[in-house]
Image: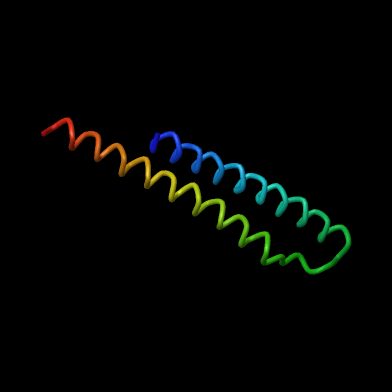
Length: 74
C-alpha cells in the first residue's frame, strides 16, 4: 500500500511538472509575441513544486524498498 501511494505521489509530481512546463512554454511564446515581460515566478514555483513532489515520492519508494529488503534479510 505504501509503495502504491508513493508511486501515485510520483505520478502527481510528474503531471504537475509537465503541466507547469507547458504553461511556462506557452507563457513565454505569448510574452515574446506581445513584448511583455516574460518572467512569471508563480509558474516557476509550480514547476519546482511538481519536481519536488516527484522527488519526495521517489524517496518514499526507496525507503519502502529498503525496509522490505531489510525485513527479508532478517
